[in-house]
Image (tube, rainbow, N blue to C red; front, side):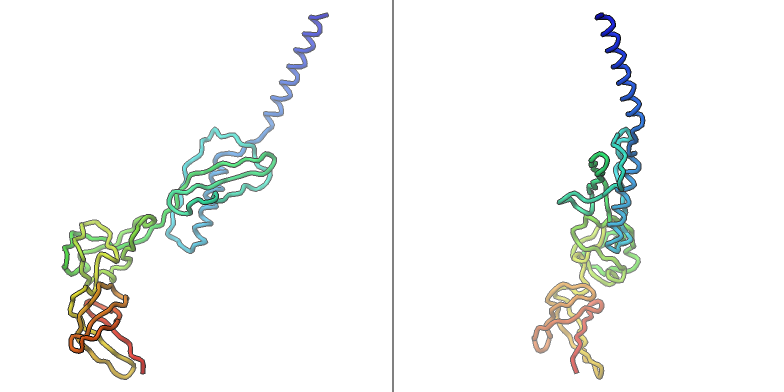
Length: 237
């Protein structure tokens, strides 16, 4: 009798194991590739929303052995709370049905731009010419200072300190008008213009407003930098 019961029990266990194995074989899993594609699509959408076409997106590939139940609904992607949105970032990809799961994908979002770099060493107080500089595409995501983006913004300017060959030229490392320089200021309106000599009281680059002092009257006033030691003041009629 005992042998018969044992035989029946073994048969039942074998049957249930077979059923479980069959059920398990019918389960579909979400591939690592599909999760990665969802993360990339999300990052590209986030990048394009900033109207910046110079962003590059890359991800760290997931382990292809990852086994997560295939999602019945569309996968959702989002930045975790408090996550950065540029540089090295993390994207969460989640599923809500039939099983709730969430996986984190490591990624990078870098901004690139063409910036002005020195082709040779530029000494302090020299005047930068077109042959001294070049435009290079670089990763500007982590730059703490504003680079010069147009060569016209550097030509004719003076380095405040020595700039090494191959270095990025930053806005605060050069001056089109340097403190202590003798400059020409043109005061004009639609009817006439007057030139006067002045002394620069601050360093400034093209397009910036800076303070100068009239050599004759000693009066200080603001003027806009329009060229090498050239400034302009617009007079109201």
